[in-house]
Amino acid sequence: MENKPCTTLTDSDVINISIATTPEEKKKEIYRLRYNVYAEEIGYNLVSVDHQNKLLYDDLDEWGTLFYAKFGSKIIGTVRVNIGQISDFSSEIVETYFMERFQKFYKRNEHYNFGLATKGMVSSTYRKFPVFTMLMTKVFEAYCENHVHFGFGNSNFHLLPLHEHYGHRRIGKNIVEPNLGLMASFVVLPDDIHHLQRVNFSFYKTALAKGKTQNKQVVDWFLAEFSEAVNIVNSQFTTEESF
Image 1 (tube, one colour):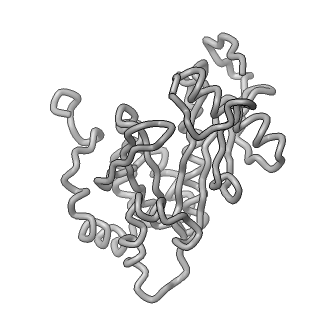
Image 2 (cartoon, helix red, strand yellow):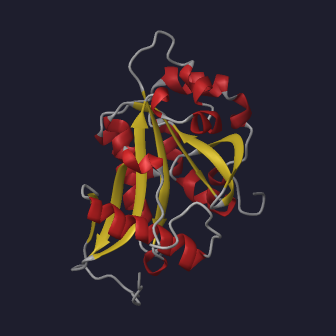
């Protein structure tokens, strides 16, 4: 995918966030954008990918919601979110994000959903604009609307401050992803609006707009069950020098 120079956006320029609903949007646009960003822009040594057609996809795409950002006729960013019960996720994902430990919160098998946000990226030409924040806001809204108490994700270590700014907390599990290398795993609690207020005021306002209030039961359980996560340094609560 060709990236033309884009140095400024004017008031008349509009970035729209949509959900992919057709095979053309997914295969010809989003899967190709993923390949373009990871293989051609960043230069990851992708091993699980369709190199012949320059497409990057996996099984989660079959039932996930694929958000994409569009500037004019061009897709410039995307993120995928999967929302479901623990049985909907593979055993590898369940293990990676300690989902069985998180499931203990639901003592009586109440209806619940876990969330998983992956494949989030923005084309390099547009990374200085708030495209990724717009995409992550849609993910957060989906969590609120689907009563997700725990939303998971991962990132390379140099992007941890960005994700911590969105309210994510590291949960002490690092993995080696075949395509992207060493990754840190994290979780966000949409019910912990006090934490969101401290790290990202826009997400805090989104939570309030979606009717969220501080859910002490969820927060207290997480802090007790994952006491090791409390001691992990969060870049949002320390100086750059001490971090």
